[in-house]
Image (cartoon, rainbow, N blue to C red; front, side):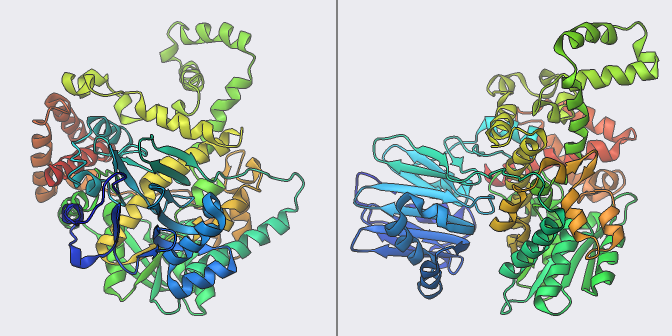
Length: 605
């Protein structure tokens, strides 16, 4: 979008589209005198109002609260509805728009542009404000390829990737390219800096003494409604089923809504401690689902690792992207067009174990400060304290507890295990702000509208764990496999309901998802309700020990990375020695992250 000159050519588009493997024949182009918007149809709709000189583009599955706008969207497309809403509500358009969406609103006469994404960050938008022009896309890589942007690799983002295993928003892997956070909008006009703001924030307004039974029923009703909103009888639909509470709930509700048992898709691993298929089978038997299973092997990773590196517009190190891809691929091969995923329950209803763990450390801050100042030196400097188990545990507790949140949540970060000068090359380390990842975490933590520790951690996880990581993992891998993914537990009404619960209805004395699980008793199997949280781990480190092709791929990538001036070769050698010394699973996590970085750099430089 050019704010000062007429734009008549499509010249920049091929380079941007090629970044994501597309061409001009794959998109529809809407042009005006100041620029153009290209989108894939029907996922993205565009519209122009010649009378006002306004344009709109909408991607995703938005839900209009206004009945007239809903009808207009059904007949004329979401972009047409967006233009009508913009005329009617102005900047308030985002208050009457729910669902998942990325929206672009352009006023060619006033020469201004507004970008926004949905409240939970299912969709994404990246942009570069380049002088008198604005370049935007759902892909940071595409923005970087625009001739006006010509963005170089962002060293700061590479450091953040190695710290977070993804590049946290608003940063991207390319210098000068940014991305929006969940519920954020950005406005651009000629000769003025971008104005970024949040149009929505979860309100925490729990009413003390509310009837728990009524809240449990309300939760069940909203969950069923959320699944129904994502179910389309005209599209073959299935559900991911890991055997955890979230995926089991979605699978069960899908069967209830559809009136027939759901088709479910589950992944297993032939590695001790990693396979959870038995829990998926418990749920499948309970609801009578049409269960489909696939065992991921080390051979599969040879295919998946370069595929992952090529698929993402930024380096992405969450190893569970691999099983997610094969699960989505299995669904596509079985005739499924849409798959429902259970992401979001942890971050809005209190399901992550660290919420309870950090609560234990927070008790320390209830001790009066003068008493802490007296006790700490005595305890930390206790003679032979490391050889006395109770003293050693107390010392460890105090050392962690006195670190404030959210910084304390990163005390086990891999990059804190060694001095940074032992990990990174001096020139690289001198070029980055090593505090930036924590700054981004603090911003999200303290932006929360609640003063409660557990709700602040959940707010942080909404941004870092969910929007920047898990949603990117699932959406991109499903796209690579050729299926559409939807997230019922991120339904706006269900998310807002979570704000009506008290902190103790989320986490209470070590119990996680208190009301969530209590509401589902009788609907889910007891074994699903009581199982400990496991996650979607990948036995990469275990397989790397004795799978020759996987080891060859890894060694080649690690050797190449060591020549890029980012990570010191002697540190890479140390990781491989530690991996071989009996800590294969633990060190395998960081080795995967490093291999994916090298494979991504090969594909993008």
